[in-house]
Amino acid sequence: MPIDIVFETHSTSEDNERGIATGWLPGRLSALGRDQARDLGRRRRDDDIAAVLCSDLARAVETASIALSGSSIPLLLDWRLRECDYGDRNGTSAAALHRDLRRHLGEPHPGGESWQQAVERVGRMLSDLPPRWDGCRLLLIGHRATHWGLEVALSGASLEDLVEVPFHWRPGWLYRMP
Image (cartoon, one colour):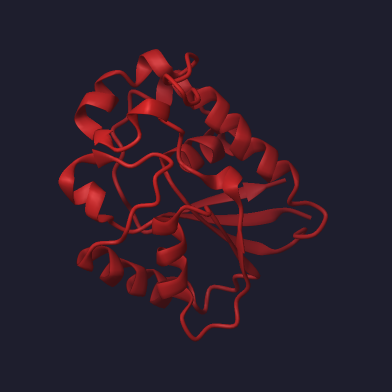
């Protein structure tokens, strides 16, 4: 049976507001981010979600914790839903890092990973979902790399095309995993 996946990015972090590319650093939600997380909870609380699978980075966990507060929906952390590891560039200027985005589609960031490696990591997580979650609706909370991994694995997108599309937040993306 198909698995329905609702993907949401972590809410706005203090680093997002300062223009910092957090990468594999923990990060912390801003006041706006905490409000967004509460909105996420209101949006998804009665959405037939069987479980929430979440990046283990602090900003994603904080998003899920606020969104699920008072809910009985299980929260499962998975490191494979993390952002791309920018290596030596974790915590640097997002603008500078993203100017070099295309270069690191296949070439790892110094001391880190490439976007291709990050996308493949998300794909490996997806391959572990059946048979436990067959026929279920799951909420995934992650990052740009998580989103790109879902787009490549479930929508047939290419990284080369994704890098050309500016990222715009929206209240969730829906995917169906056959």
